[in-house]
Length: 314
Image (cartoon, rainbow, N blue to C red; front, side, top):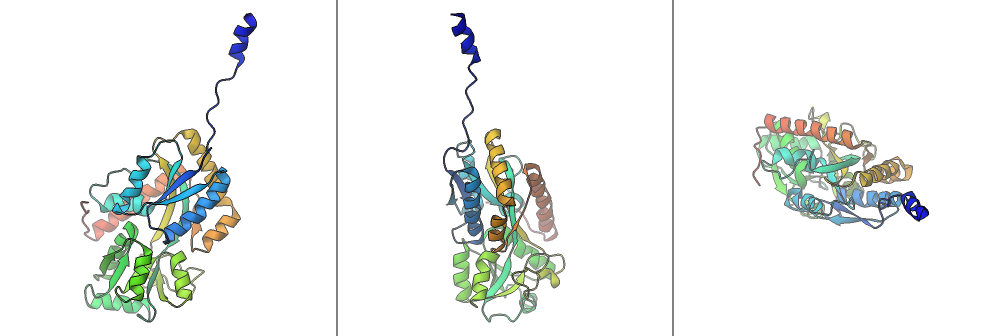
């Protein structure tokens, strides 16, 4: 009897459920086939290998990225639903819209930064001899140059470019890069900002002309294409991506995710695949990720103030 009593206390407590034991979802706030989607699929495959489970990409575009963020926030807080987010969602939407229904610093679990890439300014092949001609036309006659854009980063970037060049570029919103490319080729819009992974093949095939890049310096993959800030001092726009989960995801699951993320980002094979898209790996844990968001909120808030841009009510 005594043996039974004391032996029962020797039994270890139930072990916490291992994580992950089934596939994970990776929500992407943009359409399939675009620059972020390309990155997401490369990332999901690599992250899945380090987690020992598949990571399934789920495109949830629309609603100024609110459809994707709401899908994450309404998911089970178990760590199995993730979102590959960008500065568009985390740092621009909260200042661009007066009633953004989430706090980018408080309403998510910040796993870590993932990558960064600039935009390539493109036009229909032969439409413009160079980027200087675009600027000259835009300055000479307001809204004589139309620029297609998708998402918050591009939207506010066009405004910023207009402010710095003292011009008025006509903004034309699109849902995805595929529609942008179609209308560029058809001459229905003059120029656009698109990611390198989408732009470079089309430039190589001479379907589009690369006029400039938005990075601080020229891209190694496009050495003959000038950076915008070579002619417009101070203009630099990079898109960064980061991995977030539900605000109430278990800390144990988040630690597993952070460990797998670090292994993924340090993998030379992943770095090489990412570089082929014009992307660069960003290393930054949860606190560094949150600081990046805070810094960018200040930056884009200043851009709006300097440009006299009023927050939009959705």
